[in-house]
Image (cartoon, rainbow, N blue to C red):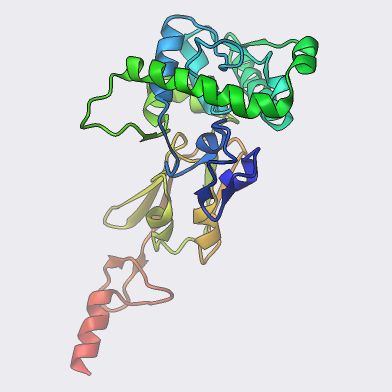
Length: 299
């Protein structure tokens, strides 16, 4: 997912080439497993900006900004920020930076605002203007390298002042906004919300539980009753990485953008033909593991 979205082609075989990376944050916004770490305290910055009603802008717009690039703003993060705050995002410098990032940001903002308006809420305000003089005066490569390095140093100083990191703490951290989203978004806002994915489990499920073990976000959880296998789906945690779908032997699970309200699936367990107890089957087994072991011992 990060490889596909990277605007610089800086990611290959799970490794980031820092000579190519421009710290835009696109990879942070799509990573489903917190594998990418950063020295920028994005969550603290977001909390500070929303509370102080600051405009979200990159460092090319103003050196006082703590954000190198706005590409880290995932659509669900934007939606969460706008629940309790008036949010303004300044894209005026994006046109002179990278067209792919601008396209992605505008797409995210439009999708977010569509849902906000449908829910009767204030949309995110977007500032955008053509920077003709700026484009003529400053070559693209110089902006991408020299200015970024210069402003990254200022950002690091501001970051250290903001976070006040102790020597015992790591300066790098995963960029993950689950806690922030949960604090800002209510359950009713998730119902029939196209910004959050839905789960479908069909009748082919054999209750093996492999999907819950493979999910990097732990968006799928399972618990057993005396007769039922209950699978719970967490909309906030799911990033639609498709790992559960691609590894399900029965093709019984689907993560979709369709508007589904159901987040819990109850499947009857198989009944052992020997002892009559409900059990989790292995492949097409008709007896439980205890009965199978006993039969092997007697043989």
